[in-house]
Image (tube, rainbow, N blue to C red; front, side):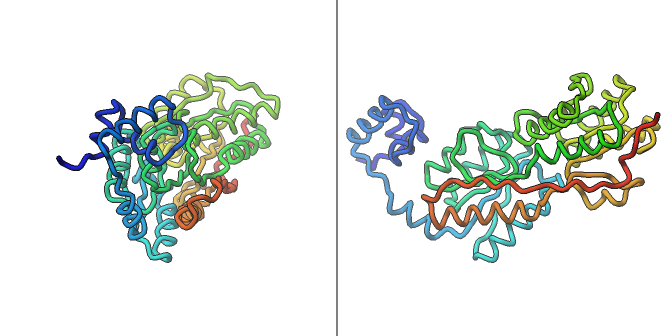
Length: 336
């Protein structure tokens, strides 16, 4: 008789291979009846998981996996450098994958990481609720969430204070005298999008200004999406005197739309972007922006992962790094 595999156990029990792995690794949140079915199948097939081989691979692997959501976004350039520097200093190599914000593509790369038995994975997930992260955790491959939280998963995470950064940006505009402030945000199915949206609303409410849905647009976090959102917003809300834009590529699109509509910055409209880029000081006028500690974000993510490899039982850590508002010439007082 051929040696039974976990796939044979899954087929006999009528469950997925991931469920078999969770049961055998005594993971929580498995229903008792499912656990009994799997264990009966294990006993009937006389299945013996090769735990020695798993532990040997884990000890030998000196490769870390990194899955980012948009390789064309300059935000990730410094983040990746921070991760790579820490990995190299500790004798690890880095494998980089780009998901393009596509959950199916992300799942493919997660499966590749698991098949290659990497030591650990850092991921800027396309969705905070994707269950395929479990396939890594169930095979004892630790995961660190980068820039975005992963909902209901006990994984280490490192991100920036998005709410506070957005709040500071909008408060700055209010203090300059603006009362009609538009918002171009990111998809709300990601923590970064929701938190920056929350910071925008919080600033308005705390300064006794109305939160008006008609002054808000959600883009796809790309330059073209920011351009389309800004064109639509400026066409339908001519009273706007300022814009807060929730990421760097979206800000580029908004700037293009402002230029095409013949508006002058900051005379006709002020603008603040989230994420300071090297080109921000080259604009005329230079861009007011919320700066993120991108290199430190990557460095902290790598250090969290190495600490988890050293001590798998340590408490889960959630690191939040501060942002800094850099005021330049793109914000001024509104016209009387």
